[in-house]
Structures are given as C-alpha cells and as structure tokens.
Length: 581
Image 1 (cartoon, rainbow, N blue to C red):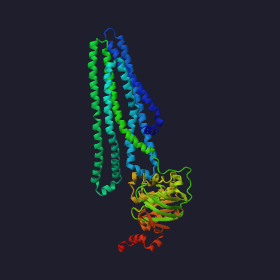
Image 2 (cartoon, one colour):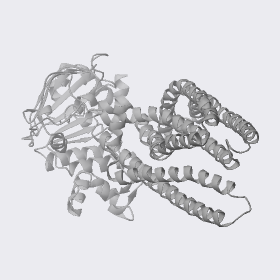
Image 3 (tube, rainbow, N blue to C red):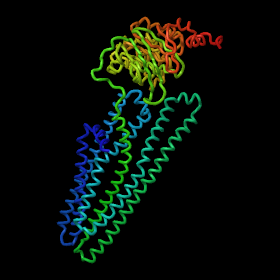
Image 4 (cartoon, rainbow, N blue to C red):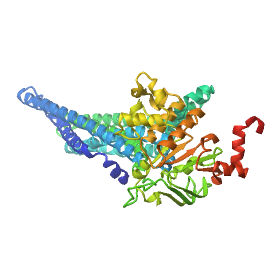
C-alpha cells in the first residue's frame, strides 16, 4: 500500500498547494465545530431569567464561530475538488504517456480494453478516494478525537458509553472490508471483459450487421453486464449492513446518554451534570458516531480504490520490453536488412515459435515480395525490422547495425510500415498525411499522393485535401484508405518501406501503378511488399515464400517457377484458376 501511494503521489505535482490547504481548512473547521457545543451548553445554563447580556454575548460568539466554520468548510471543499480533479488529470496523463512507450508485447499483456478501464473507471475511483482522503479522512479522526476529549472533559462516566460503542463499529467495518475486498478484484476483471465486448462490437459493427449477428452480440454483452451487476449487487448488499448498524449504535448511545444523563441531573440536583452539559454530551455523541459512519464510508471507498490503485500502478511501474539503449545509434546508414538465425515467439518461455531459423539478407534499394498462407507469420517477420517486437533468438540488422542498438525513434522514422489494418484519424486528409512529416508542404503532400495514386480521388472531393476524415476513416472506401496510408508513409522518405498487404483493396491496375511509381521515384528505398496476389510481387528482386513461420522458398519469379514448388502452385491457381482446379 505504501509503495502504491508513493507511485501515485508523483502525479500530484502542481496540485500540492491545494492538497495541503484542504486538510488545514478541515482542521480549523473541526476545532470550531467542537467548540460550538461548549458555547451552546453555556448559553443553556445561563438561561436563568436574570440577564440577557451573557446570552446575547455568547449567541453572537456562536454565530461568528458558525460563520467561520462555514468558511473553512467551503474552502476545504473547494480546494479538495481542485486537488482531486487535478490529480486525476495528471494521473490520466501519466498513464497515457506511459502507454505510448509500450511495445506491442506490452499492449498484448494488458489488453486494450483493460487499459481503457484503468484510464477511466480506475482513475475515477482513485480520484474520489483522494478527495475523500485529504478531506473526509482528515476530518473524521480529528472530529472523533476532539469530540471524545471534549466529552470526557464534561463527564468521564457518561463518555464511556461512546467508548464502548467504538469497538463494535470497528469490528463490523473490519468484517465487511475483509468480505468485499476479493469481490472488488473480481469486479474490475469483469469490467475489462465488458469493455472488451463493447470495443469489439463497435469496431466491428459493419461485420456484425452484415452477418446479422446483433442478437448474438447482445447476448454476449448481456452476459458480461449481468456478471458485473451480480457482483456489484452482492457487494452493495454487504455494504448496506453498515448503515443500519451505525444508526442502531447511534440511537442506542443517544438513548443511554439521555436516560442516564437525565437521571444524574435529577439525583445530583444539577451538581454532577447540568442541562447544558447534557446537551453538549448529546452533540458530541452525535459527532463521534457520525464520524464513525463517515469513517465507514472512507473505508469502503478506500477498499474499492485500493484495487484500482493497484491496477494503475501496474501500468505506471511497468517497464517496456523495448527501450532505446544507452549511447544509442542515431543514424541509419542504408536500407539493407539482415536476419541471422532469427526465431520468435510471442510469449517468452512458452508456446510455439511464430518464426523459426530465419536467415535473410536484403541489399539496400531492393524490392522484396513476401507471400504465404494465412498464419504463416508474414506480418510478424516485418514487425521485427522496425523493432515492434524483439527477436527471441538471433539478430536482426538494419544498415548493418543490430536494431536493438538504435534509438527507437530514429529506427522507426527510417522504417515506414503500412500495416495490414489501416488506421486514419479524425481530421482533414492533410492532417492525416502530415503524420508522416509534420512540416510537409502542400507540394510534398500532393506528390506523395500522386505516387500512391490517391491524388485523383482526393481532387474529386469538394474540399480536396481539406476533406474531413471521420474517426477510423469511415467516410472513405477501403482502397482509398489504403492509398492515403501509403502516401502518409512515403512522406517520411524512409530508408525502408514496408507494405503489409496494403494494396489488397485496390484494383490490379492501380496496384501496378503504385509499384511502378515506387521503382521510378524511390529507387534507393528498400521496399518490402506482403501480398496475396502474385502479380503484386512477381517483378520483385527477391520473393520469399513463408509457411509455418519458415522461409520455404526464395528467389526471383523465374527461378521459383522453375522449382515447381508452392510459389508455382499459387501462381498457377491465380492465373489459370479454373484449368488448375
């Protein structure tokens, strides 16, 4: 717990002042609230009918102290809100910045839906707990201690009633917390599953509708939602015991204080205890037991926030598996690529190899085509080049240097990858293209689009390059999205350009034009093209055929056709499909 608090405390930063002023104002408020019952007792005892002067004096003093208490309470609430909201803002920022440093393997470890839950629900829980910690959690023990001291100063015998009630309430809090803590851990895992269901459904809504699977997705969501509801209901039922237990203790103590106090006044003739003092005791009793009730609320919130804090700290403390080394290489000499005995598995120490014994040497400026069946690890192979993953065994070199020796930003700026899942962000076409080069001129942008065969359709839009792209690029076709992503990659002027099945949605003519533009305009750039169509790679300097995570064939189109192997079979099926069948 202490370690978590140290980690989270780093996110307070510029809100330290508000975090310190809140408990100071709370302390002043508590002191004033504990003095007010004593003044009330004095006013009651002075109601003898002899003179109004002391009553007026103490009454004015009471009003002044009540106003001062109100001011302190208002300021503590204001500063608590400022500190809590600011702390949450910094915490989300720190989480987001940390996630930006994660590798693909780190994202796989946590899962996207879990990270979203941690940045939203978990941060909100910690924010509420923090606000309660610097205000209510300070107020409650101070009020409890001061009220107990004041009540003992009036009548030690009567105050023993309050002292006897406290262990009962403390035991009930302990038992409740011990019961609900494991359930909260389970609830947050359910939240992750619920968010994952929503994320999958929204991202794939077109597929859901095209296959008329709405009812199936609804049932899946209903199941995840029902699990969260069931666990929360169970927790709320347990926590609901707390309030009636508190109220019962308050009523019992008030009845005992009222009965025994009245009896003491009557039997002693007001010498052992006055009417005003009895009134003060009742007020202090209410403050003591109300403090215990508030303490129970703090306890419940802290119990819930403790699990959220743990999940947040997991992200903040997680060190990415991929980091730039000390004295990292800052320059990529050329676009040559070497794989020396490379093997890779997604889970270290377990599972089968996704890639096995890859030995490959590509000269700078060459065009390399990669084909293979689904699941042959084509994408995995190219992700090692830009160090999105690290090889489990062997060495991957770019420009003659091990990729692990490069500064990550330098390496990835020289290796432009157009991934299989093309992503456009909300904003204009020009804004999206400038992801490749932030200071690209309009001429550079248009030239890149011409190379990617995108300029023609962009010119047909009313706003041309200022056309707004909806989130995820939903207002452009799959082929248009692919060409925009290729243009974005070209703007980086990379040493290595990787197209991961990035022309699958364009027609063969456009595909050929893109490849011809590459050959003519960027001859010194190493080009790696992953494709399902043989026509997309047949003119490549080197063609690789992957199967089961291994390179089973490599060579030029002519040499592979002569081997009469897998490549020949794929080519025959695609060019003479009916005859081959």
